[in-house]
Length: 125
Image 1 (cartoon, one colour):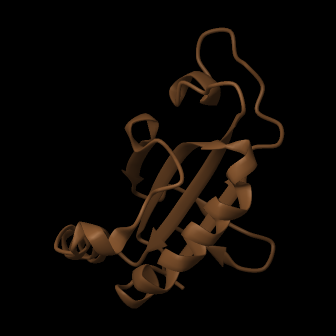
Image 2 (cartoon, rainbow, N blue to C red):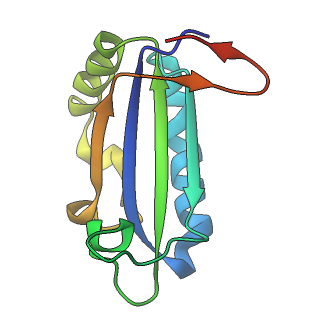
């Protein structure tokens, strides 16, 4: 699996809505997969300490009763990712439903892989 592009997201989610958020991501994964995404990862904050200068908590302006969620999606290349997002923008907003987080406080970005290694498979980038 050649990964040519990575999207990363930080999202503030109400701690009580953990399962709702998981279901939200699980619902959308097949659509992104069908548009070319290779994988998705969703990590529920467990050990997210406050920093001295900046941190994940401040990045999303975390409120009491919320947890930081770190997500990533991999793509074969940026063109596939851009085409998928362009297609998402054409969907009827009514079909998207409510997002179980405050999208205004979401932090996101696209990244070109610099190094991807794993114990199972080594991919020189």
